[in-house]
Image (cartoon, rainbow, N blue to C red):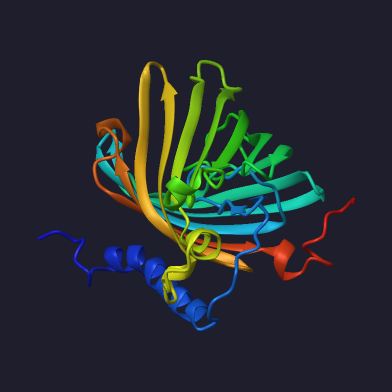
Length: 302
């Protein structure tokens, strides 16, 4: 019999963060309805902090994610659990510094430890409120040798990236029910510093339908909690290296209120090289710029 039954230790390890996220959602719902006032705003549009493809905004925020996936390995399929964090700090209202890292547990072969830590900068270039459009540029560096030898690479990776988001709130009245739609995307190369290590081109996009936008700016259809704060979405993160494209299609939803958001997505591999089974991503995200705008959520320089 498989050791992946719900009562097995491995299954309990995988499902524990998901159960914790479910409890967090239940606690959050007790807070009742609250309009979202997150950092990535263009006119009436609030772009949520998506799980796989970064949003086009900057802000004081923290992100925690759990991921589970099975991918091909040299000795067969590998089961990989990842606990990731990222902290973003506004230097100015348009410029943010970030630090990120992840703790990885895998089997076949068994290994665990921290992956390389990363640092980054992101600058908000342009916002058009009337057309719900915003774009930014950034660069992230994964610092080689900063993680566990069993998990992390000994070379660094530098990734300059362009981010953009467009809401459909400027559609005519005849298409009013499409106004809650938004599309975001990112694209950029990843350059490695190790000799003989392949570079890659990373890109991705999201397709979102904001129920809060529908309720507040199109027509109040009387959705109760928790549905009135939900954003159903699909993310498609992709990467191309050495002539091969890998990635996943991630359907899911985000529950957002003024102070943060909770998200969960499936990860469906687009091909065998991307994975052998459907994975899962779960997110807890905190907006410090709304929780404490005069202290830890305040830019260092105005």
